[in-house]
Length: 98
Image (cartoon, rainbow, N blue to C red):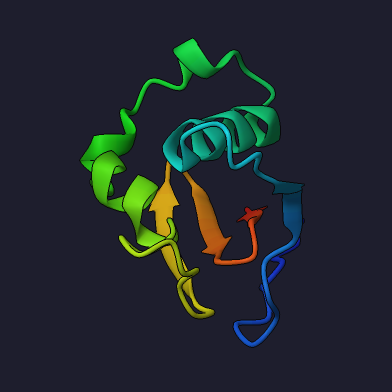
């Protein structure tokens, strides 16, 4: 007899990786590192390029300071990479969920 396990659609996916990116590196590189860490693989072995899901240059610029040096307001962006939901917050947090 097999047992069917039904996931609760209202339940948030489990956090697999939670990190803060160093603003001295591109945000896109930090996202790749976070997803690779969650998948337990080398970043070069992810198999799916980031640009297939989101423009890396746009991501790098999304939360960067304005041209006058003032920081941007708060916010976040959510996208999928491989089988992970990636949320990047303006405060520097990257959350990867299964």
